[in-house]
Image (cartoon, rainbow over all chains, first blue to last red; front, side, top):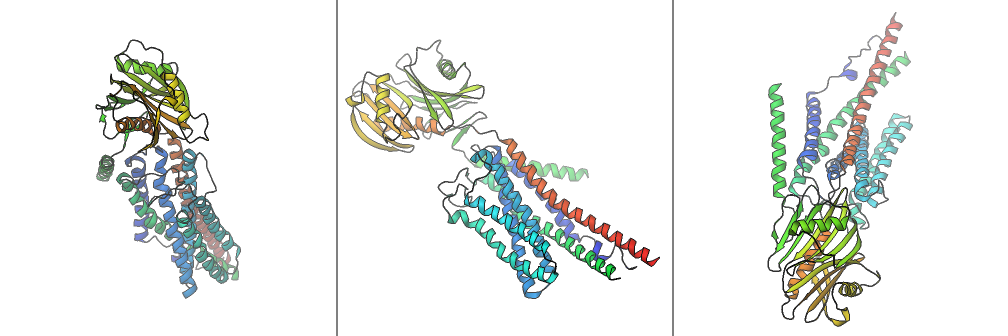
Length: 246
Length: 294
């Protein structure tokens, strides 16, 4: 017991320089993208100021896509190699991805209120996005309910791989089901789409940096922080077991 | 530190300048003002000024104008706008007055015969504490052209004929039965059903539950070409249907930004909270270990 120290490298290892740089880049990039979306991009004359939510709404979905994609990768590699590190990556992907997916869902509802005159409608895209959020929320609940660590990791790896179907469904459903009011940004919108707009150069100027940030830097940085937290959690749990074992 | 602040200000200025440049590259098909937006009529002279969208067709001697006006009610505001625009001290009673419900509210429809062979058609509706007035003015002494919008009496009918007949009766001594059907003609904004005689033309187009009506009367042989007449009608209908006010929904934008920030802060806060919990657990374990050692 006497060898327990709070500065143990497993418990309180200093942040790698790359992670500190990424954290700084994420913070500055997020602020810069907000400036681009809120101040630099032109106002959509048909939808008004609320259209600027787009610069958060769509990038947030693609950020979730990256994070949930990491969960699939983590699950596959864990099942293949049995490395716990990949299970931590999978878990980090779910937590970060769920936060992003909720941002996507909530900003969508807020945007819908003035444009569609409703907070929510059971449209195929909205429904599939809600199902996606519930699927990953269930991942966290199920994971917390399995005691055996090895069984938990294996089961959640499989779950994380199959849960990605809900992400793909959300992504492609408006191109499969024509009866939707959700517009398509790249390509022709469905006939019933309400609130579509043209991706002009002003829109692209604000959208592209946001997409790059949310698709790469933000999920990677947040997942890395979550990974380190999982690592610390496991170290403290191991110390607790050791302490209990005397 | 001062250098970093200066760099940040320079970067922000660069971003804003880039935004201005890209906005200039995106040519809008709309006249945009703080109060309203209206389609720019291709091929018409753009005489727009601050807060007034005005397009003139010299060949047809016609002008379409959109502006904000003050008044006790929509007809009064429309009359005041027309009188002010044309420098008239007073206006005679309108030759046509009606109402039509469009997607964005109830519009008053008015038509006036002015002096020197001019005629004016207007639609007007309330917008907050002011009124929007869209006017069509024609000053061809050889003909009289009016543009109206009338709610369909029978929405199951896919023909504007009943509204054409009603409009003709109200503003001319003619009935639709006195005119010959010339057929349907396609224009960019929709299909127009045309009736004509030697001295009169009537064209109608249905959009939603309303008929858009264009009437022209004049001396035999002095009417403009049918294509030009229909182009005028289509320009009027495009202006009436294309007019819109940019909604003020900034509160929803700020709500969306706040919710996004809250979600991210919750995620980051949960990481920090759990890390703090782990540090506490570790401190407790250390305390237990030292107590055990004692």
